[in-house]
Amino acid sequence: MNIFLRLTILASLALLIACARIAAPGVAVVAESSAPSGTSVPPIVPSQPAPSVEARVSEGEPGKKESPEERYSADLLYEVLVGEVAGQRGRLDVAVSSYLSAARASDDPKIAERATRVAIFARDENTALIAAQRWIELDPDSVEAHQALAALYLHKGDQERALSQVERVLALTGGETDRGFALIAGWLSREPDQTAALELMGRVVDRYPDSPDALLAYAQLAVRANQPALALEKVENALKLKPEWTDLHLLRAQIRIRQGEMEQAVAEMEQAVAANPQDTKLRLTYARLLVEAQRLNEARSQFELLAQQSPGNPDVLYALGLLALDAKHMDDAQRYFSELAGLGQRVDEAHYYLGRIAEDQERFTEARHWYAKVPQGEYYLEAQIRIASLLAKEDNMRGARDHLQGLRMQDPDSAVRIYLAEGEILNEVGRSQEAMTLYSEAILLFPDSNDLLYARALLAEQLDQLDVTERDLRKVLERDPDNAHALNALGYTLADRTDRYAEAAEYIARALELLPDDPAVIDSMGWVQYRLGNHEESLKHLRRAFQMSGDAEIAAHLGEVLWVNGRRDEAREIWAQGMKKDPKNRVLVEVMKRFNP
Image 1 (spheres, helix red, strand yellow):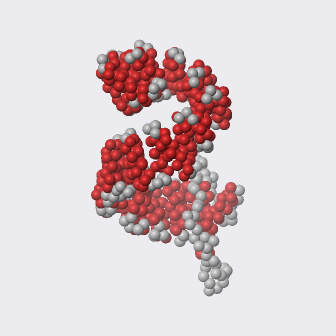
Image 2: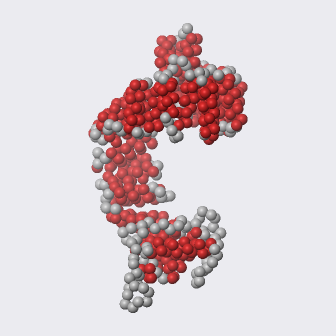
Image 3: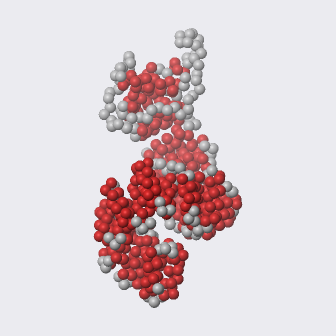
């Protein structure tokens, strides 16, 4: 039997004995600990059992060698047992002392490793240092031992000795290789003193100035330490040494995005793809960056190239399906999602979006078929809600509501979301007062739900119940003063439906501070400025909001301000763009009738 495993079994027996308050002859039971629960030492788990050793002769036979088990004295067993019992009882000081004694008495590196880990767990770094040195003495080729000792030296501020241990780790992992540098950077990223960790990694890199692996590891550590400028510098240096390395280009793009330099990230990735056109990983990242930058046509072209380079790639097909759906190219979207489902990849998403396509084309029975094929998972609830919505569109409101009621019983944790969906469906089919009643009933069941209050407030505004709107939104803001959507809704309602424009502007300004790039909030600011008579300021905000989203209601607002300022042709053009986006938008239709009958 492996000696360390044998000691572990004996330690477990000792725990049973201690729990029964029976002391073995000659072994004192450790006193009860006053340490809080959760501070016991984790149990021993040997990382790799050693080969068994057979005892060649029985005890006492002359001229025969002693077995390894027999070389472990009663004192050593005692120290291990006491250490384990003390550790499990939270007496970490006793555990540390006993395990250090065991490590000194034993030639087994596993015991020294255990002593090191127990001391580190107890935050006794002086003892951990001694134990780690013993561990290395017994197992000089252990990467973990040298890494532990490097960390302990780093904590003491001894950069020279820490660096020496890091050099040993590099040597043991094959010299100047990505594995060694990545291992060091990964360990250092978990160090509490990131300044000291970066300093140590910098000294490592100074010894390997021409190693792109070292520079990449240093850059990754700098990113984790929230030092993007330093990370970017190291990536650029590494790219000079190894310009074709994909990982460097990917990390540079990540850093650019963190710094808010999306266009620069896209431009650099475009150059990288041009230099390495067959690198699918680079092209995939480039395509995703284009999506994030809202350059969707260019993104689609890149994904189409990827589909040629890597046919059957599920991520590429999924992206192409979403892009086609966004562009209203329904036949293409259906083809991509059907191919995805046929591959057996991302099947739930494929079935869900096939349902969306069929629904958009008013093939409701087929849409329900696809939604029903979405099993439990991320898309399940939304698919089930859309089934109810389709039943309502087919004049089966009773079936829709029964479906949602059953869904609430099946998934009570999602009851609020389902109530919100039911209210939306009722409102869509013109049964708005029933939706109000439903929201009020749901609020009695879930009085702490801001989402329900917010939904009722918006519906109340549609029904000209402005007192309910204001009351519900103010209640949301009492609970959550920084709820930007509630601030915006209250501000917009006051600006649009009352003459309390100054008060409205205050709410909207607070919302804009919280969501400076939200088109809806920017639109509200433009609208309240119009109400205040600040037309140029209004146009500045409304133009920005419309450029960001193209929303039909924003088009209505922008067109109105242009019209009253005598720019009627421009107003008609904006309204026409809004109609293409949403020809049934109530606000847009009304404003066009009012100004351009």
